Amino acid sequence: MVLAIAAVTDVRERRIPNWTVLACLGLALVWAAAHPQPLSWSLGALGAGVIAFAVSFGLYSAGLVGAGDSKLFAAVALFTGLGGLALLAIATALVGGVVALAGLVLRPTRGLTMLTMKGKGDFGPGVPYGVAIAIAAAGLVWAGLLHLTNVPGQV
Image 1 (tube, rainbow, N blue to C red):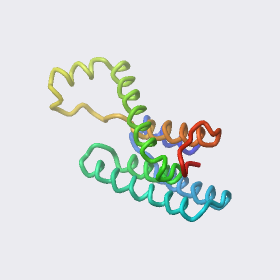
Image 2 (spheres, one colour):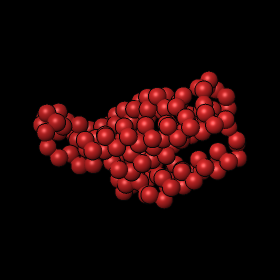
Image 3 (spheres, rainbow, N blue to C red):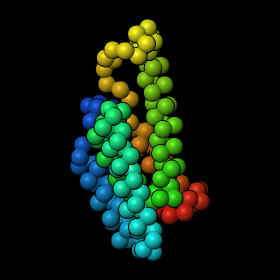
Image 4 (cartoon, helix red, strand yellow):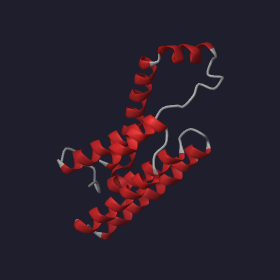
């Protein structure tokens, strides 16, 4: 539910509320407490969060993603651990591509303008990556819960 709120808010307002990121962090702590794991798994989850934040902060610094996207990605990486971090990144990128294509289908004149201006100019807000992060993370968490994936360290 928290991820759904983050995604919907990102679409509507082009921002991800900090409370949704904090809620994801809190849920990760509750999950860890409710499902005691070996220390290596906990350290892997923490490592995944740190790596995700470092990389996504770099993307934010380069102006490629928003600050909310960066924070949300780092928070959900705690659920996948190191073993699922690459899969989370790939799934997020793939879903982000689908979201971008859907945006072009819904607003074809924007795509034509972008092509005409060869990418130069202000085309308004970009892709709401909170949607891609939420869908990818929810999919991976559910796949882990249903034992559909064999990613070590995953939920």
